[in-house]
Length: 244
Image (cartoon, rainbow, N blue to C red; front, side, top):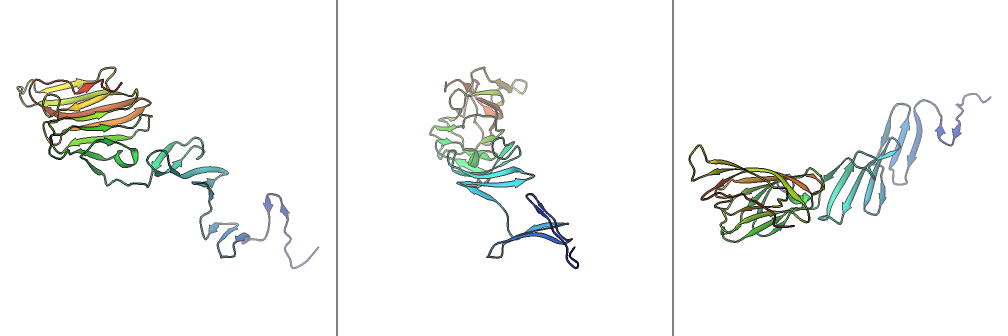
């Protein structure tokens, strides 16, 4: 038996030593990870980089994954929950093109989650006399919400439309400028195949600045829609099946 020294035993997954510092891993640059009996500290974050992926690990599992997604708008993202690799609970868009919260749409626009989701997208065709089409991304059940509000009254149509076989389900309430108080509020409901909303600044809505529509990606191929608009003349439904 040696006296004045504390014996240590090293097993494949076991490091045993005196109270205090037990294990220190250090690079030549001074970066280190230090573990003792009471705490764990590091001079830098530990991570694993694979191509465009950065993984964070906890409890023996990858708990989060940061990535640069090249196939959908070139924006960065972070998967959290699940195992962080194959079954994320949710996706947080961070980067690429950050939106200010207000987007003004003046020409035909294809919406992307990174720029248009969670924002107020103003329908502001300059001059108010040229058709402006807004195309939604494919509905997959992300929960992303897209709000559109009239900022310039356009007599040549604002059109909000889906892609592929997606449909819209919900309703739009309109306030008629020509009917009596008892009849001025009309509730337009979607049909089974509705996929397009048209605001023509008269009969189908968009008469007034501030008219708004919100669509939410609630399921694969399905958008929930609701809104409040102003109409004039012989009112007509803003919904149609013009895409599929």
